[in-house]
Image (tube, rainbow, N blue to C red; front, side, top):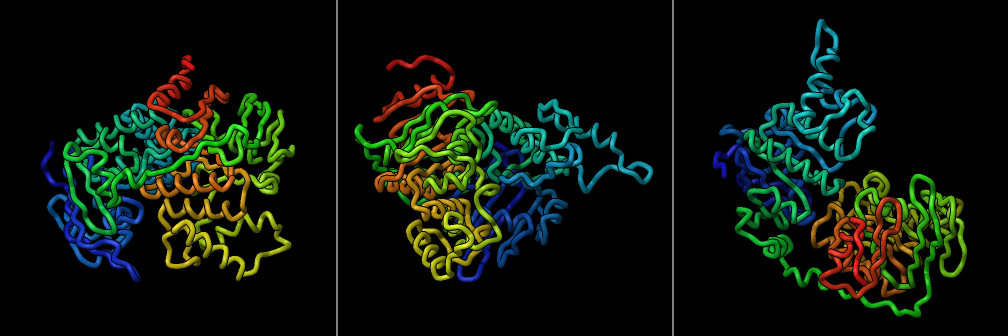
Length: 504
């Protein structure tokens, strides 16, 4: 274990109006280590990182880098000091080439002009260091999210960073892509770089990290070597509650004679989904399992009219419906929380109130606008019901934590009083406590007669919450398991995904 301290933050305090965001927090990073920074949404992780990267000014405390005190006043100044950050949302230009993205703002010059040959050569060398043999002259948008994430890291590394901050870098990656990223992290670690790793995936923390620091409510809980603390102890320290209390969920069985709420008969579209048949009963929670690209999201979008089915038929509550677009789905009392809440869910510059009322207003039609009083009552109702952490409904949704943003999107669709609610990765990138709250809300809605389709990459939570599980593979329905589930369920799901037979 390396012992040279490359970065030390001592007694960091930051006060925002009405709240102390950080209260005498200490954090240290050694050269050649991966240090996980952990805590629930709102624990202070982002505030600490923003302090380190010059976004937030600290009210008290010191930051020492390589034995020299620094006070970054801007992100660019932090980069100049050798501190680079790769955020969960990829902040690159999809219309520019891979090479241009890596060197934008610091292009090598020759005789007063940009040296494109040198840019492309150096970009190719850099990507080969990341074990990627790609054409760096292609636009970034040509490549997968995983490769775009690697390009972000390549850019950060190429500016001669001493400290690399990775903020939820694996949230959109599949298992193989995560392992590729971890290989790169190990190489950077071996070169002496210090890496701060922020994630909500507990298994990944233990797979790659050397130490962890836990924050809760803006205060330091402690710093531990990775082998000093179990996952159960980690979760308990993060949330201040026992894990059994957090996930004490009560999934009720669905009666066999319960009516079908939604039936999809052999629906499909060329190049997206082959013929798929689904039935979900009133009050049932159907989980969707499968690898990224298996067709989970495409099926969900087809059931919401975002992707139109070119064959088959859909029946909702006993009535055949034609879902040409999302407006048709909303009119049929189908609601959909999309996978990418930043891109497809929230409107960051609008308030919580405005975000919540959007779907209700869309169903009413914009010739019949909601009064401000109706909007206020609706927003206040769901802020209270979902325990959304905000001083009031007028706060911009973009200023909320990921877990609270997800609750606002859920509130938007709950307000439409749907018969069918489709949730695509609703717990991705949020902390353990918020995840449990979302799961509890799903089950409460089922108790009220709403049928829920729940898509998640985490098999444990699919099994924990679902009455029935549909397994997708290569755009097809590969299998279906009906609860109650036992200890063999996860292995059975993995076998179906792999194309192996499962014993009845």
